[in-house]
Image 1 (spheres, rainbow, N blue to C red):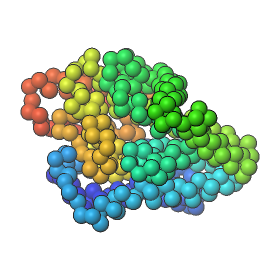
Image 2: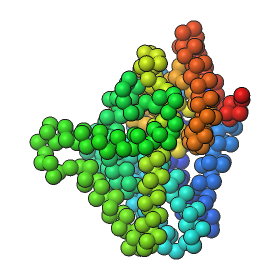
Image 3: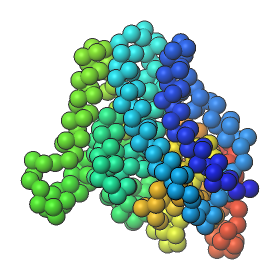
Image 4: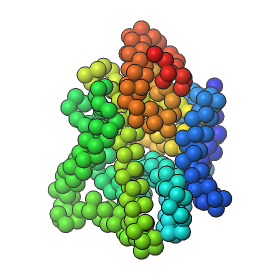
Length: 361
């Protein structure tokens, strides 16, 4: 069953829900709510909802009003974040230590989802929207994001790079390697852009974005003292880990060494959970994005012949932290996908998400 485009459009308002739930959770005395929802409720909902069967060919022209509506959602998100961020500084100053730890977990979920909004905006042609992406990325501490992401699109799937994880590589080893590497490749891209545009060395956009990170950190320190600094520092580290871990999950084992035809599906695993697609601005349709990076999020769909994840991102993130379990399950899926590619029809259905797969011997 194909989800109607109009329903897909309305559903993307859920991208704003994490911040709304964050505020509601604190007001209701449940600062843990966002974390519990995304790691407890969402995986269960994933098992109950049907897969979104829409593929890129089903998503055609849309009315102009709907186009403007969808284009505006990430910008509304940035505006709301500009209100929630200073609010969070005052919350960090007032909560008791145990509540603050719970709030930090929920805040980490929100900042991690902010990465998907920044990712959408950095691909837009309008310069001011890319500036919005830079401000958003800087506010959550991933200030090298825009420059590093250019390298990601060039090198993912290649034979000798740090963006497509090896089968034997754990998420922890990969995250450390790629996080360290991200600073180097981002600076290399910035230097090249400085030469191309004739910008002075001091006019470094990574450094300017890092000033945003420093300013936000100073804000937490001024409002909440040392607790605010530690709180925001841990959230920055957590958000950086999320970025690497999701990249690990999206591209695990998919390199040219494995199968040359992987380029046609963007070297990416995907998941067709409708709710996850709405909340993350179709970030799970990552293969289509790699094949057509200039397309806005609402024109992305899942390839019928792409490799499929056995669960949604929250579950995959937890499973990746148990490397033997993750590798066994994903290797089984990978081998089945490679075998099917040689014999099945290009639009053959892939197995839907199934948590039970993780517990099969």
